[in-house]
Length: 174
Image (cartoon, rainbow, N blue to C red; front, side, top):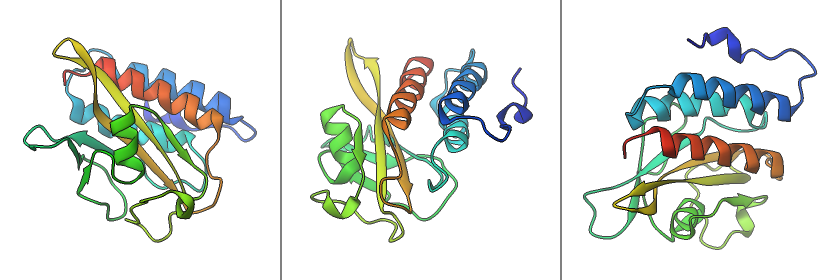
């Protein structure tokens, strides 16, 4: 069992070390848990511990199974008001979902079609969660993290959030 105190970092811990601890904690939290909702809640909490200090609470969007065209709907999260529905290909989240590729945006004002759900957002990282569904790999959700500063995320965030997304993708029954 992973205890909440496992997420407290000592001063001087590098971002890489923090992510390593967070990913180990996530593996423990996700063990033998197949439901995507608790995993997203836990994933959001552990992701918040590791990403940049300027980052807001991570949001998860999940594939809307009832929609005629592919779209994402806001999953469970705690934080500021967020967009409820995002079409594939629209905004940073929709582009990440449609392309199945992480979007690391250092200045959201420079991203064509950026959706400004939060006026404080200056940079953003969106990581697709891909899982096998009906025999093929499909985007089933995304992790969306905004930052109130320009250049808020880097390659370390990208690599480790992609590892978290992979862990969530294989840990859930989508």
